[in-house]
Length: 278
Ligand SMILES: CC(=O)CC(=O)SCCNC(=O)CCNC(=O)[C@H](O)C(C)(C)COP(=O)(O)OP(=O)(O)OC[C@H]1O[C@@H](n2cnc3c(N)ncnc32)[C@H](O)[C@@H]1OP(=O)(O)O
Ligand SMILES: NC(=O)C1=CN([C@@H]2O[C@H](COP(=O)(O)OP(=O)(O)OC[C@H]3O[C@@H](n4cnc5c(N)ncnc54)[C@H](OP(=O)(O)O)[C@@H]3O)[C@@H](O)[C@H]2O)C=CC1
Image (cartoon, rainbow, N blue to C red; front, side):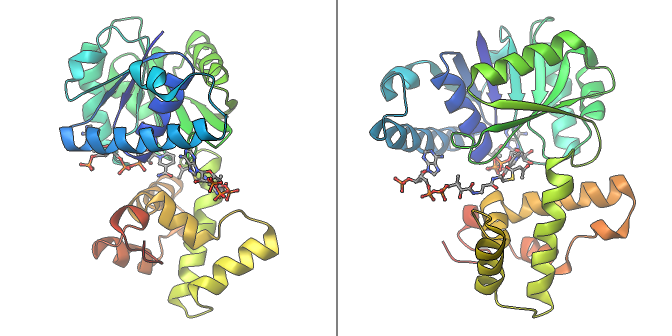
C-alpha cells in the first residue's frame, strides 16, 4: 500500500511515521524543503526513542527507508490513500483537495486529518466525495490510540471500511462519528480548553494552579493549558471558530485571551511561548 501525507508538521510527521512503522510505503509532502527537514528530524528522534524502549518491530533506518520526502504534489499520483494534515483553514484545505482530485489516481482515497472542518465541504472540493473521509489522528500520533473516522454525506461504505481497516493496521482503534462541527473529540475537548483560558483571563487562578487542579483533581494526563500549548493555540482558535460558526451558539465563543495570544504570535510549544515558555 502506498500512503501519502500532506504537511510535515506535528500531525503529518506523526501520521507518516506510524504509517511507515506499519510497513507502508510513505510519501510526505510539504511546501518547503526546510519543513520537510524539520519533520524528518522529529520523526528520527521519535523512532530512536521508541527503538530504545523496544517498541518497534523494525530498526529505525528500515522504517525511514520506507519514507520519501518531497515538495511535489505529483508524487501522490499512485497513492492508495492520501491523508492531509496542513493548517486548519477551510479555504486552504479546499484548494489543496481541488488539486489532489486531479492528481491522485481515480480509485485513490482522500482523507483529511482536520480537527473540526466539515468533511462534506472538503469532499465536494475534491471532486470525488464517495472516496473522501475524515481520518482524525490524536496528538502525539505515535502514542495515542484513537483515530476518529468521520463519514461525509457521500462517503461510500467501501471508503469507510478501507480507512477503518487501515487505522487498525496502524495499531490504532478507529471509532466512527458523523459530520458535525468539531466531530465528537473537539466538540467536547475544545470548550474545556477555552474555558480554562477564560479562567486565566478572569484571574480565577494562575495557569499552574488551573493545570494542577485538572491534573490532580480529574486525573487528566496534561492540564488544559499545557494541552492547548501542545496542540497549538492557532489550531485551538481555528477549531473554536468552526464550532461557533457551525453550531451558531455563543457558548462556543473563543476566549478573547486566546484570540489575543494568537494575534501576538504566541502559539504555544511550536512558537516557544504560550501559557508557558518552552
Ligand atoms: C486537537 C485535535 O484535533 C485532537 C487532539 O489530538 S487533542 C490532543 C489529544 N492528546 C492528549 O490529550 C494528550 C494528553 N497527554 C497524554 O496523554 C500524555 O501526557 C502523553 C501520552 C502525551 C505522554 O504520556 P505520559 O504518561 O505523560 O508520559 P511521559 O513520561 O510524558 O512521556 C512518555 C514517554 O513518551 C515519549 N514521547 C512523547 N512523545 C513522543 C513521540 N512523539 N514519539 C516517541 N516518544 C514520545 C516521552 O519522551 C516519554 O519518554 P521517556 O519516558 O523516555 O521520558
Ligand atoms: N495539533 C494537534 O494537536 C492536532 C491537529 N490536528 C489537525 O491537523 C492539521 C495539522 O495540524 P498540526 O500538525 O498541528 O499543524 P502544524 O502547524 O504543526 O503543521 C502544518 C504543516 O502543514 C504545512 N502547510 C501549511 N499550508 C500548507 C499547504 N498549503 N500545503 C502543504 N503544507 C502546508 C505547514 O507549513 P507552515 O509551517 O508554512 O505553516 C506545516 O508544516 C490541522 O488540520 C489540525 O487541526 C488534528 C489533530 C490534533
